[in-house]
Image 1 (cartoon, chains in turn red, yellow):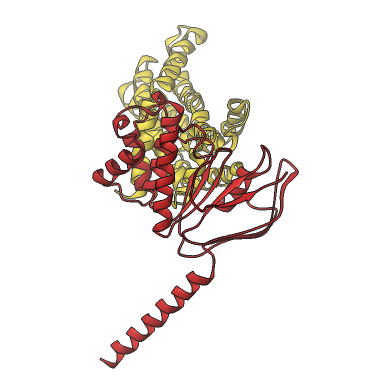
Image 2: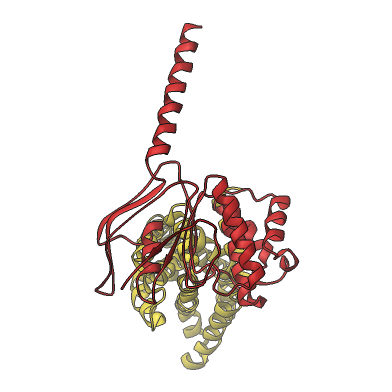
Length: 220
Length: 222
């Protein structure tokens, strides 16, 4: 009995310290980041801290290093200098690059099913259906990805991001081929994701219309 | 379904539906097998003696032919990034991809080997041994070709690079697999050792090639 109380106390202290940790340490941060590509320095001494529930929108002219920065934050590129830190709670990253990573012969539904299982999300048919409906790709479920339009491909790729159930979303030009209605859908999804404690970092040239998102401009 | 199995199933499906499955390498193999006798000549004895070597050589070339596809498409369409961030180890991903590719694309090779051996005038027993030796060699051939494919992923003239990297590494498989088939005719007591060496090399490729491929792909991402 005494042992149990002691263990309970320990658990509570642990939970407390975890709570204070998540409150103080940003979920994703980088300090003094220097990134180069092809021997040219794109980003120098760049620092950014993103907390859970935040959205950061990176803007800047072509070639200013937005994509490279996103790849570095995702851990795909080793920075030339500086560090990228992620709090332990943010286990995985849902990444959407320039390319949609779709295979032309695979149907939208099969693609989502495979990736969701692979990324450790919930590949339940009802959940899949709900997300496909939200992104207006439910009617395309059985169509092969190669036969979709650019905007439809992007929406299918965004459904994969949502289904991963990961808290960190890193999106490169998520809305470039999307129409107005789809952009509004995306904004809604992002708002809900943030409310649930997720964070989003996106690079864009178009106005995403995300409420109270932090804008960061990269200069070449 | 576990993530690794889901990956295997997906890659099998994609290899069949997207890349035409086994048709390309099988047609290539068949063409090589039917053209070689035209060059060698009609002497039945010479054909039976050359048969095992020609069959194994044709199979080796057939595994090089689709190797560019294995990782090249993933590198260009953004799938590679997602695999790297999937939470699974990249080496396991490479292993699953290469195994799925072997099963989906190279399964006709041992069958063609048996049929080819019979057509070249070998008896049924030695023909079966030829098929068995290629069954053991196919995973090794595919894994080595996959490793070369990972090194060349997304590069120009990837095909040339793959042939230059993979062919020398596949040489032991060629020697032992053809050796087993030849021994079946000439020296049956050497069949066992040759088959075991073939299997050993395939197992070594199974253990090492995925790590090499993963390292190559990681370097490619940066």
